[in-house]
Image 1 (cartoon, rainbow, N blue to C red):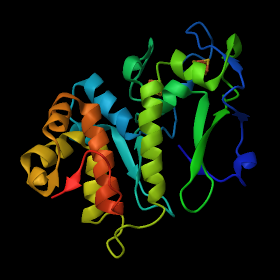
Image 2 (image 1 turned 60 degrees about the vertical axis):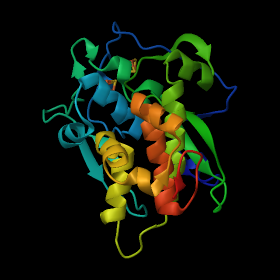
Image 3 (image 1 turned 90 degrees about the horizontal axis):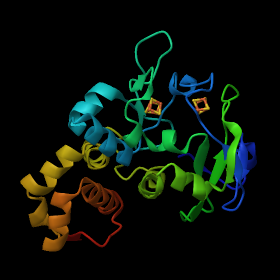
Image 4 (image 1 turned 90 degrees about the vertical axis):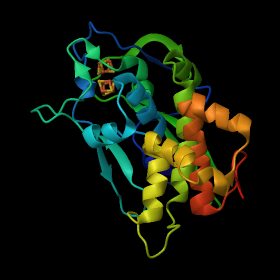
Length: 260
Ligand code: SF4
Ligand code: SF4
């Protein structure tokens, strides 16, 4: 989810949608473009995407990172982006693409769920105030536009069962936007602090061990009821990871964690 400013919104290609604007779109296997959109992609993966894909594939977050992602640090940012590695074939297909379609459909990533709608975070000022907009941007080869009933962005999100993905990814985008500044001057984005923050967002198995098997619960007060939820739910653990990054990197307190 790319941060933009009110000044450069108009330069972003695609149709900007307000909450009440509608568009028509339907994707069907009978269309001759079927699966064309699942190749040669810069497919950003957000923390909740990785959580769901690990569950779908039945592998650990460490294994997922080793097998499926490219970690890329871009200029002007102090936290890397995570992209899905495309297959090493001529068409650079998504590793989860099969002839029948997406093999991880029920847990497909946020960007695939919203496609061909994108969300952008609009930074309103340097104090971090922001909003979100939607952009309808199907590629030229896509034959889905103009099909189906008109829908608002909210209806599309509901239709794609993407509400939780959107909530989690918006929370992550707010944290990621903080990293235009460097919380660890001198250390760089691959220093020890940055590695810990990356773990809390993307390597949830390692973060779970850090919370429950290191001295974490001696350094931070976490209510017993919250601990119970953390043990039962990966999404709760991820939300704790988000909160911990904000506290650890930016000294921004949250509701679940208190330093001892
Ligand atoms: S290109 Fe568009 S219509 Fe075709 S399969 Fe992809 S999303 Fe569906
Ligand atoms: S995860 Fe599924 S929907 Fe997304 S690009 Fe891969 S095959 Fe396509």
